[in-house]
Image (cartoon, rainbow, N blue to C red; front, side, top):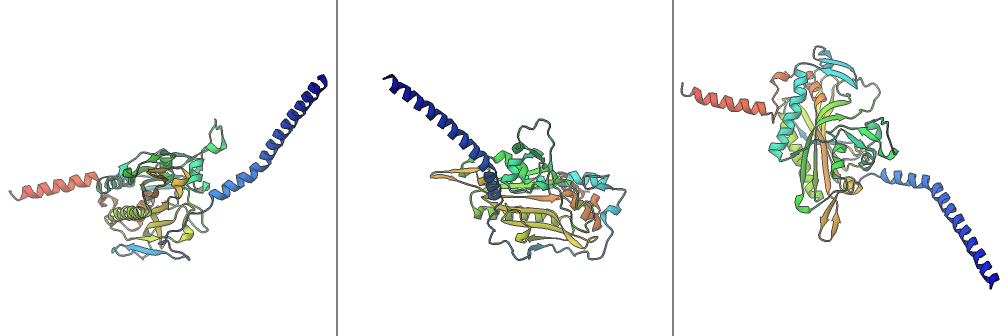
Length: 364
């Protein structure tokens, strides 16, 4: 009997040792497989979105709208020649003075006000920072923004980037892991604020306000139930933007950009461009992108249906890049003091006062 107990005890000890050995082997296997899993996850996250049927391909652009204002083809001095109004040192450091500084703020406020009153958009105030997980979810190239150096960083996965509140990434934190009912869609929003997008250096390109990192901007964001509704909202955003740019009195156009210009998350992008007489080319001053349900799936932004869950289709874009607009207005000889801003509350008050005074003059 004692021999049987001793044999059983010995067998139990052997099984325990074997269990420890197997657990250690499993840990070792997980450690060895971790780099493979990491590579797979990054490769999976880098898969691009499906292209929209309207997206041009083959290095071509599709013209959507061209303003009737004549194009200024005559070579003009660069906007940096206005040294009494602009002090430009580099892409990260520049100063606008006098009328330019006022226009920098008023134009952003005016367009935001126009989207709120005319388009029924909800004004938002977004954070200036976005975490790495959100940038990866939106397939944003990390070199696009500045990495924040944090002293108490716990995890590399939680790194912060300086994006600005008027960016697509600035909206994502509010919608991550959010569940909404179909009746609450569409959700149209607009956010004025800063944008800190680094422009890629191109050979022969001169640093100026077209390449400046920091600018005031107006970012739109709409979540919709379907692809068809997303197209309707994209057209609505563009139509409101076209109304605003018409009032500036400068030639501009709206195009669909070629597929090669899109990020992995975009399936279609419309670009608003004004002509630079100094550089003899079109400069992008705004854009609107259709992301489909690509981003909403990755941040778990869901619609609760009767039979399960679906994912919203997202349309978003920066419809006003103020720094570039100011530079282009200067090059086209526009006096910013007399520049009409659609949606400007002050201009509305002036129009009302002028109408009242005109009515009073009838009785003099």
